[in-house]
Length: 330
Ligand SMILES: [Zn+2]
Image: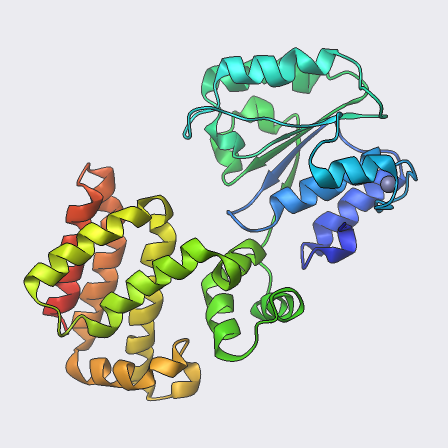
């Protein structure tokens, strides 16, 4: 039921799109570029709903049949490209769902709109396959490619699309969102906002997702008790954490946030600057028992996990090495 006014931040992009709608200058191909959770999908959905709305304004009416279909995810002329393999969007998928489908006239609306998430997952053949469609789309066709890395798309694709770069929003705006939509205030909101790094979707996950709650529980169990852990407990903790491999970046970010707090406390003794204010006694204790070099080693070891995984070290072993480094330096 949302419209452009419900999007927090991204003012330049909202203005650009609403201007284009008003002046009837909407492009046939867009690239929405920006990190996961930054709001690309919400923007694409609201753009698509507005363009298909029977009221033809710069915001969707949210009450016509078209808007209701868009909100339910069942609009016959708004298509989401799906793919079978998690890491690749294949040439066949692109041909079947986009290149040939776009030749069929819209079912009930003015436009036929295609939204492709994670467009950077298209392999080169798939990108070449959509090139001609992007070059000469039918008058009713609109393609919106969402990507975390526009530079990984072929220059020939990029140059034919309007590229809109999504920017992280301010921490205050993230907190405003958390208060308005998740009823989250105080230290929980501080934590979610710090984790979000300007991305509303990440803030929402941190506030509401059960997976995230389990993951942060796992991380903080290690962070809080690492000094007391025996070696077998370290190994078993690394084994348990394998369940979070798919959300490894979040997992490692949480570790880094914790030890940055220890570092900040060690150098400033200022509790107000901490993210984990409610853990101040543990953080103080850890700050007293570590050296600056030790904390640097820990933060470097957190970064090194990703390097090791690229070198085909298993996640479990990479975490064992991380936990051992943390333990040695505490
Ligand atoms: Zn409508």
